[in-house]
Length: 94
Image 1 (cartoon, rainbow, N blue to C red):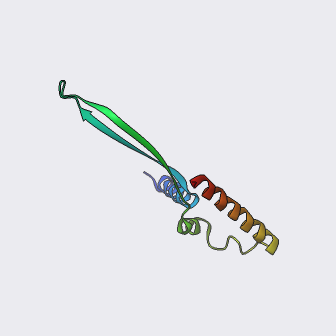
Image 2: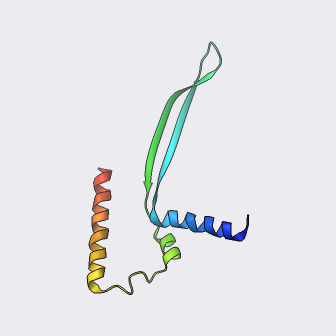
Image 3: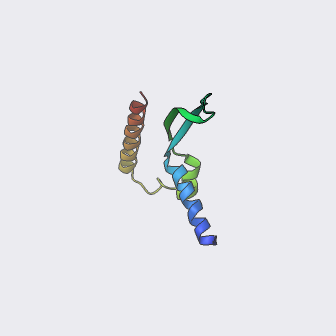
C-alpha cells in the first residue's frame, strides 16, 4: 500500500478511538450430534459494548489547545454539554 493510504487508515483508526465506538462480540457454542457426528449451533450470544473515547487519541488528533480560544461563556456551555452527555450515558447503563 502506498503511504497516503496507510496514513488515512491510521488517521481513521485513531479517530475511531478518540470518539469512541461500539464493539460487537459474537460467541457461538456448538454441540456435536452423537448420531450423525455433525456439529450444530447450540447457542449464539451477541453483545454490544460501548467503548468510551480515548483522551490520548483525541489529543493526538486534535492537539491539547482545543479550549484555549474559547471565551468563558463558551467554556461553560461546553462544560454543560459534556455533563449532559455524561448523564445520558449513565442513564443508558442502568
